[in-house]
Image 1 (cartoon, rainbow, N blue to C red):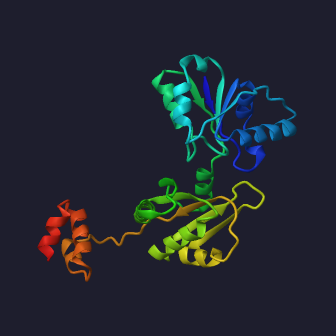
Image 2 (cartoon, helix red, strand yellow):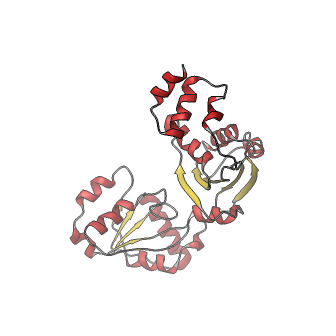
Length: 268
């Protein structure tokens, strides 16, 4: 049987009794990083005065999961197999989903334990009253894919939640500010840890506050939904805009579903 076990995102006391039991009974532990998991078990052993008998640890991460899955057989799941990512919930911006699908495809028993999760913790902390949100994980580091995804986030009619590293936080804040400097955002770093800290305000104010700071720790960003004016955009509104024919053609094509090239030729 496979058990997906969430691990603390900072505070060791967030480990659940069920998670500890699963780790005590494990005969094979798949880990995003074996070093991190062994360190966690060492800390739990000291804190809870426990001995974890499993000594079979195997790496399972985004770079090797296909090869690992090919090596598995149905017989392997007669053991108690546990999967843990480095911190938080497996399958949420972490590996694990392909192991679950392997179990589904082969009609194998599996269970997912509830536990610590930065996404939901930050959402609850944000104070936004909307109950709907979209989770985008980490943006691409650069290029067209990053720009397209951030544009989608900033145009979303519901809350958007991102993860961000300390190395790219200021860049992301600047890009959000450049799109809408008045958009309200909520940021929190180092959730459940000693130096946990949160901010809420306009994207411009938070960017100005953090742009010269020594940014440390992992961050969650909750972005207010795009506000609508209540007015319907008409084709004539776009046709009267003082913008290039190419850009105008793309906007009209999005509204009408017509071919961009045909519309462009009509405009010129």
